[in-house]
Length: 363
Ligand code: CMC
Image 1 (spheres, rainbow, N blue to C red):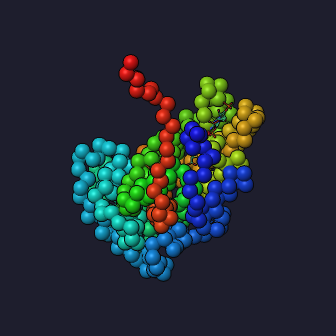
Image 2 (image 1 turned 60 degrees about the vertical axis):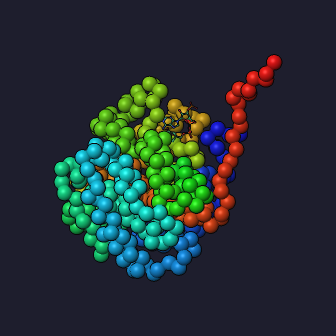
Image 3 (image 1 turned 90 degrees about the vertical axis):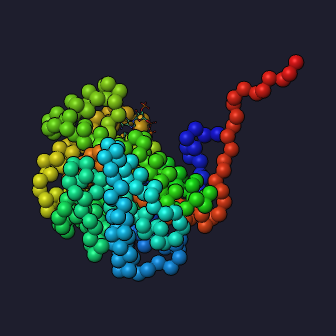
């Protein structure tokens, strides 16, 4: 038995491969390096859904149907009441998704892609006392998310940055939330149930809750000159440097490079965050140098969360919403895995090793 199922192969998949030694992520035969910044979110939906949900509409029809689904699910935003508004954004999103019908078809899948993209911006606006903005079905998925968040048409560069983020995190092997999705799918419960289980797994701080603390760290460091001393002090106190290290990647996390590229392109067009990225690059360099000295036996490099935090902050998502944005991007992967598991057909039902007391024998 392996604690945490570490290194246990629990599924065969054609969807994505995390190559920790080479520092490569392959999604359906395509390297992330060729997808992020080049493909749109809708392209990756088509790539991941291919062969799993019946005949796929062409790219234009797919975008149209996804836009219509955003308009359809907006009706549920009226259910956000004062009690729900007290909850974290990801919990509001989950509560509304629980109202949606279950099913195994493309229609259900598109509704589930639309739902978090509509519910998160609405919840964020309502939390700050503003009216939710209705979707614009003709916009791309990424553009509409930003339009619903900020109540204005986003720039081309902002849309490209969010597209790059959604593509980068669309799928990542058998992570905890994806495994949860597959377990539920194996019972034939339906895609909505799978996505709800996955969101429950994602929201834990060991999975989808890390990028907020990266910004806290940058705020605490403040200026590039403080970086080395602050980082050394944190390690002296036994702390982990947020946004560094990974369980599988033994070299650089390729998602960090994809997001750093997207962030740099965004900042070239919107220089407001230029100082922030300069600080982040200094912190990255200092952290790598300090970690090399302090942890010589452990290859530690920057991970996806470091540049996720900066990118989502630059796109004006509040830090308590980062897990929810992660869910918007990962839902396509959860659905694809759920369908792959359901089509494979075997119930996931492992065994446990009983180590408790045995019944007393009567004397
Ligand atoms: N800062 C300082 N030391 C570290 C760090 C770090 N960020 N990460 C690992 N180490 C050290 C750790 O202290 C240990 O040293 P020693 O052997 O001297 O005790 C050694 O490296 C191995 O640590 P581990 O916990 O066994 O390594 P792991 O592979 O299980 O940890 C991790 C992976 C992501 C939990 C860890 O690197 C970490 O806590 N990073 C900071 C939080 C973070 O950025 N999380 C987001 C990760 S990306 C998530 C995703 O892919 O979705």
